[in-house]
Image: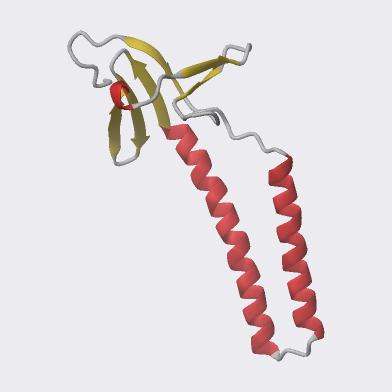
Length: 133
């Protein structure tokens, strides 16, 4: 099923891990909630007419809708993506309802990989430059 070339050896395959929320994510949620509630409170006390209040509520609803959609797309991306590392290429496999899509990058054009073992059977392969590079 996977597009391995003649003589190409599979070194590793896996899926992205579920996104783990961290302090900065929760901080972002609290700040956005305060801004939305504060904006609606200012709009309510400033004497806006009915149309202005509907507009403010619509803007708040759109902001919340975008946040929900972003999380839904992220979950779908994680569920449909597989990574393959061979001795020649880094292959991305996306399995979506219309079909399977393959994209790859030759390892020769990437920086040397840095592999980090998390100790629980998972790990990270990183091709980004370090701070000193």
